[in-house]
Image (cartoon, rainbow, N blue to C red; front, side):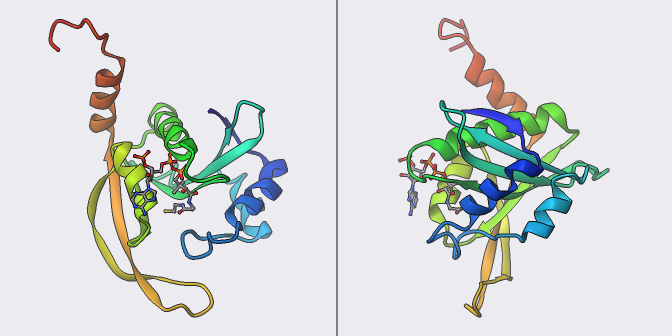
Length: 174
Ligand SMILES: CC(C)(COP(=O)(O)OP(=O)(O)OC[C@H]1O[C@@H](n2cnc3c(N)ncnc32)[C@H](O)[C@@H]1OP(=O)(O)O)[C@@H](O)C(=O)NCCC(=O)NCCS
């Protein structure tokens, strides 16, 4: 999985991925007008994950890059083919990109509380649950309101986990 910043040319692919059948109850989707504005907005980062053939395997939209308090949001996170490890691989790249290229102290997200697959991937990549925002999200097509779970990963946690991942197997302390 390689990561690159997306451009306006990538918006059709992004819209096709976020509109996949079955995703409507899991993740939000935006209009072409919204994406066209946001992709060039310095407060946002659009990150495309590319598979070995260079095709877009998924994407992440970050918001809050200009936030002076160091809170950056993972606004949207979607892969084209779920359940094949792409989400975990992409999220690790996105986390590294965020803490390397922004001044984020707290990288946070929310997810529909019943989206256990997403929760599993976020937890595996180090996000911790902060709480629940009750009835915070209105489902499409008048599907009622649902709770959102709030999660975050802090810069010191990322730094500590990176040291563990890169520690040589023969490190005397292990
Ligand atoms: C959420 C998403 C990005 C995760 O990416 P992915 O490529 O499917 O994730 P991976 O294949 O890397 O890992 C999925 C893990 O979830 C587990 N999983 C699947 N369904 C699960 C469930 N109902 N409950 C708990 N874990 C589940 C899998 O077993 C796997 O874990 P494992 O490797 O330990 O076995 C992707 O599924 C997606 O785009 N979903 C639709 C949009 C969405 O929900 N986005 C997130 C909005 S907050």
